[in-house]
Amino acid sequence: MIKIGTALFEACEELEREKGITKEVIVASLCDAMVTAYKKHVKQKDAPNVEAILDEQSGEIGVFRTKLVVKEVQDPDLEISLKDAKEIDDEVELEDEVKIEVTPENFGRIAAQSAKQVITQRIREAERKLVLDEFMEKKGTLTTGIIQRVENRNVIVNIGKTDAIMPQKEQIPGEYYKPGNRIRVFVLNVKETSRLPQVIVSHAHAEIVRELFELEVPEIEDGIVEIKSISREAGYRTKIAVTSNDPDVDSVGACIGPRGSRIQTIIGELKNEKIDIVRYSDNPVEYIVNALSPARIVSVDILADDEYSKEAFVIVPDDQLSLAIGRDGQNVRLAHKLTGWKIDIKSESQAEKMEIQHQSRQDETQDVDDDEVDEIAEEIREQEEYAVDEEDMANIEGDETSSDEQEAVEE
Image 1: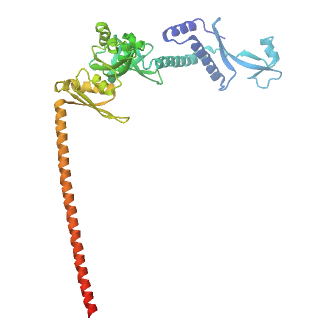
Image 2: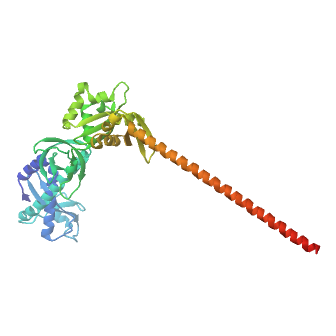
Image 3: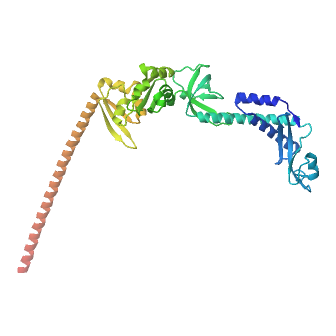
């Protein structure tokens, strides 16, 4: 047996505190390393009856072979005589199994080198599995981290047992990410790699808004108010559609809170990002009108509503066109993402011009159709006249032939 002492157990406790790797994993790794080193030492690849045993009380570890007790030994590596077995254990009988220590002399240095490599590898594997399991469960949820540094436009965020990566496209435009600051991020994806799993987080995902509303609005957490849809352009504006499952509870009012306390907390968390709370409706016309707020709407015409296309034509007052479209088309773009409808917006004057142009085209088409009818009628008349002329000529030729035949008969 090899004396280890208490240092191993102290190291196990420290690893368990720091990285969550249990003592059993370390001990199992050490035993496997001892068996591997023994096989190399005796130059024997296959040894299914060899195992390493650690005595925690004495702090010693050794390599043992399990052998079957038989009358006559045919394979010394697998069998032992009853006489030799009695020297180890007086109570042993035939067909019993006994464990015989086979730890080589001066095996400590060889075992230590092998154990170091195996234990290091096992610790990495165990740490990788712990991180992977933990963040697979957190995928699709909100978590809090600490900004570590910025590398190649990527923000590195520590979220517990690992550092996550926030790519540039998942950052809020214009936001300054200062190392040491706490930040709420959305766990977007977990990629398994040969080393530690790579965790991708987002600070611009629309689900962050959902999580914040669930935290601040008890009615949403209780299921009384339901979030139907969210569209977000991070750092600028968000539209969120809500509905109430209780007729006595106003969904929009619940999200705003007393004197706007709830919505102000969320806006502060999102660095003063504008938030439009929209009342959801099963009626597409009403839903589109609500989604385009704060602009006033004159009318909404549904152009297509099927599984292939959802299109609507919206008319607004002339002074509301820029508000309905929004800066760089932001308002109508967010309304489209929120409702899932393709929205074409025109002012009243634009709609009138389109109607006039459409009527003019219809009149022109009607005029063309009348001319074509006249031309077709003229062609029919000409064909009829031509047919009549041919018939007259045929009759005249027939009369002349009859006269000639009559004269021939008389002669």
